[in-house]
Image 1 (cartoon, helix red, strand yellow):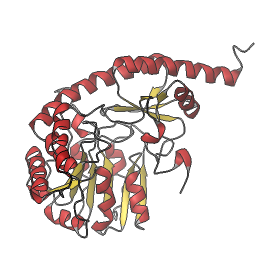
Image 2: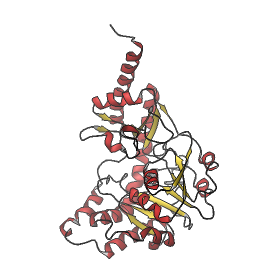
Image 3: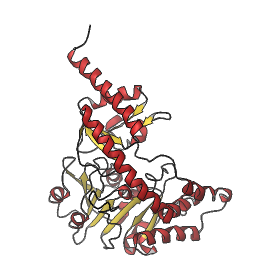
Image 4: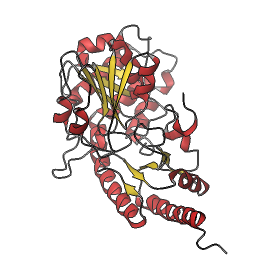
Length: 361
């Protein structure tokens, strides 16, 4: 496996350390009080194994949220847990729509499954990519919105990927913060309510609710698909605190929190994009998620200079279809963005001077 910045198993957390201003990791701050309270309520009972009642309750809350049955919900220790289970589907040929999250490729390659990379530009439409998916691919994996491009694809086009004998897996880790730019409707292109037998949707609560360290998410699919994924799974795959967090995040309070956060993210993202336009890094695609992808010459050198200023950004050198000149920037409040833009402008100037010698004495 390739090492360093180009390794598939490198994620944004490696670009940030404690105390840095973090634009590298797409997690929205600390968990809200109602989620913390749900977690804390389990702490005095950690000597007890998670019960079937705890698990059933979380599953029922999630099913109600998406208009599905509890049999169509599988609880996960984070969305990556769901990717790790995909080889159990018995597929032979996976098409990965790229650039996208690297974890599916790692898991599928380790299982010896043949992979076709369907690579497009960061702003490529899904209809363009769909036309290049091999007919014999019995698994198709994509993100919506896609990490790291922030592109949001039409649910109708995702459904066009379906074929007899094929399973389509949609990573919706950031879908809960998407908004229709015209109507303001939240999750306008989510497939979470689609009960098709060949469609699997992965969701995470760790990004929006600040729970990356807890590991909590879920999968939505037909009961027969879930039965295949559950076969041989370990006992107690989720802790009691994670089950409590899932129920809190997916209940009414969680929904209200998500609605508020979606509008906050949209405003903060608009500000970030406008400030980037002032100094030149090109935003690569229309952004719908709590991050944007940018391209700028010397991005790796810029990344190191920003680290010296205590600011972490995500190198995208290890994403299929992207280069060393791509960076992903998490959406943050305006004051943090202003600090980033100031440091980014200085870093660009230092690199330009270093290359041309202009300004040297």
